[in-house]
Image (cartoon, rainbow, N blue to C red):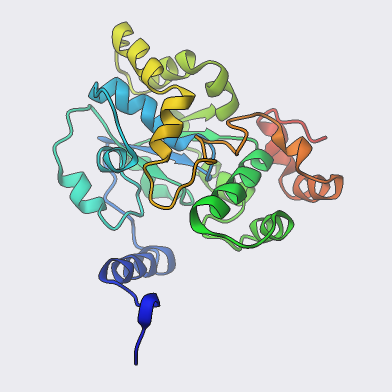
Length: 272
């Protein structure tokens, strides 16, 4: 039988097998150790932006694209994870990006959990899926599917609750995206303190300068199939706060709040 242009290449098959083992069977994605720091978040919550900041702080490179970033700070569900982890790492920690649900073995390392208002993150994820992956569904359909846990990372509140349920204590640092956006200097200092590392003022300033909004947005454009309207952790309008007010109907917000209101309130986000 001819598969034509929709044939499954070897890499796609590897990814399918990997997803089967880890998502369905429940095998660990990796052996997490004390040298690992998991950068956890729901999609479009500032994870990649934070990776840029940490990359420039610890690796002191003068530039980075998404390929290089994924090599040094890989995604936990990458088919190349083992290869990336085997490469030399001059930083004191190996940072691993994850949008997966929280599971107990992550507590073998350190965890930085990045939280963004779930309504802004949901709208931004819809825009991202349309721009990068050609998603055809409109926002109301996408929102409904998210709230019913139909997408791979579940809903914002289901995903976030899985990390909070770990009761990680000192093993987890929680950062609000909105606070990191307004005070990245303070956020980076909190991370270094959490990791029990000294602050190098020169490196800190360098990292913040190199990970500006424009610089990170350009880095995003190095991804395959990404067009010019996707920026870091935001929408076509950039990394704005409370964008949901102009995109959610009252009924949509009421539905979101009915399911996720407790977590929105816990993290200081308004319900109306």
